[in-house]
Length: 356
Image (cartoon, rainbow, N blue to C red; front, side, top):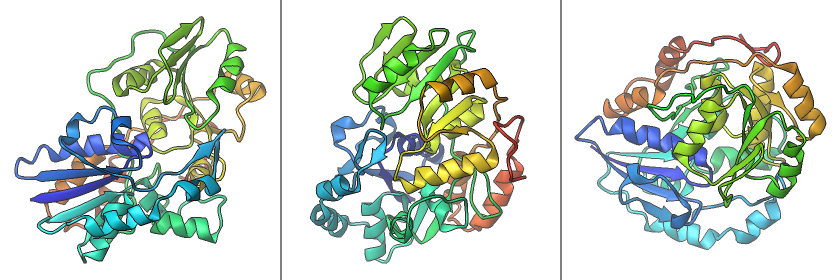
């Protein structure tokens, strides 16, 4: 069985999900997977060993500044001609299945060549009526049509009575907490001004902040610890931390929920997916949502000591690999029902959620 798998590389959450799927598909020796990533230069990827000799394309990249999406800059840097050429040049003949994790070159090449394409990713959950916030008709249309597929397999923190699946949680095996974590805070705010964050966190000397961001260097300054991006190092600090401060992306919050961490999320302004995620987190009672992270917000959050939700999601990657190997015959609705029955909602919430 030959599979062509395209992955949107602009977010590290897509890469985490792809690593989990690569491991799950490796259990089938007669399955060959060829990988394509788009959205960043090849040398900007890390921990890519599971994907062997993967292909890279430019794709489309969203530009941000100071925690806000920059639509004009995004359009200025978008090479639509290159995207069009890449779509036309990608030959998918000879593959039994094409999969896209919100990757536009693969999805649109499959559509152009009349090949069915399965979409596996969080963005495909927005094909169904799930919580939304912000945006307009244009941005919602782009969200749903950016990487069109034949069979959407959406992932979300809750099913919302729709045929969507739980998250694919990619936690490294063999890692364990190294000790007392109650004062340790993991920070991942890659879209924010990092120079503005350090003076803010310096005002809370009783907490140890581990701050990850692209281009960050390894440095310890009292209770502030900056770290470069590293999958294993990041996951170890996530496991060791009691608190998580992040944007409202999908994958990190999924991992934090699985580990029972207290979460503060700041959605990226102007980014409809993150605004929708914030709406879902508020409705479910899974996180504190802040449009601005300042001293007052942090002090209130630390003082409240909210009981963190702990959601035990099943092994979705293994279930999907089995479904793919079986020819995708079972309906997504049936697979969804099975996996949500295996989900343990656990305990706790930031506030009482509205969804049972």
